[in-house]
Length: 174
Image (cartoon, rainbow, N blue to C red; front, top):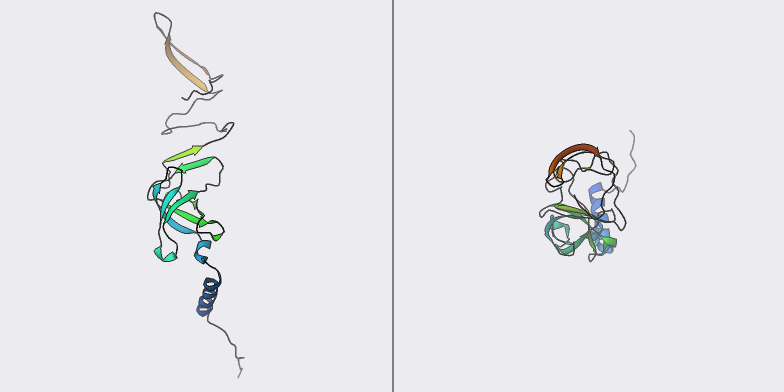
């Protein structure tokens, strides 16, 4: 008969509970070191948001303000009310909440109301086609082939022609 050595093993569940208790006892405000789901309640005039905690048992409060951090300098967006975001507290500080993640494609509210892109000098888009609005009609850029219809002269004479855009007037939006 093979004798098994006796061990002082602790069941995994009990070990987990002991470790969790140790962390909770020694790390003040430990809940602020995790990502938490929040619901967007209101957009403030300064671009921050008022948020409601989705899981009330997580130990984090509703937030009067949280600043979105998109990860791309110069880019901001207006989130839909009711959308779910993830919030992180910088260095575990409950006074520094930041929205760091947004709803993924296909989720309700994943498309923001508006996106703003800003740059000091210019914004460069390298693509064969650029579409704005509903995306139905492409935008003409320098070098684009265009068809032109219009009138000229007095009395007005109708004309039509084809060509390409060779220059644009800065500050004029199409």
